Length: 215
Image (cartoon, rainbow, N blue to C red; front, side):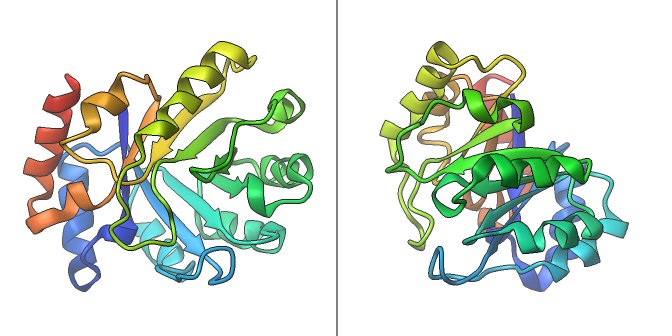
């Protein structure tokens, strides 16, 4: 099971050091949240950090666009070095078109769902869909708690949807106390922020998390 590190929780005053620690620890991906301040009432990293870090890191960059009508920024994000981009079901009036735009740039395309959103039938998106991102905490709340009820979306999605070839990713509030429960839902990728970067003990924290999931 792969782990992606969410840079929204990284120490920005020593980001270069943190990236080095992630690479030493064998992290699988780097996850960026890019907000518009409207779809969610926060703004964190922005896009420039993607551009600045890309020449320094060989790891895959996964970009989660938490914004309304995100089509306008997709090409810029790809030019800056994204390897995959997810957009929100709730923010895209025409999600099939948006995913097609992403795929046309040559990167992987994902669709994200807020905790309160039920999974629709994804069949009409499948030609352009590489992964589904399930949010397991409320994105607009600082230190938002993990919502265990979101895990059933992965289980039901695998069971009821024709999801062969689609990866299932979960993100939000995941830490040592709940990662075993998360693992039991069999996501392909877990996005973790605070639990990786706490106390600046990145390597030890990742070791503990991997032990907890048995990997």
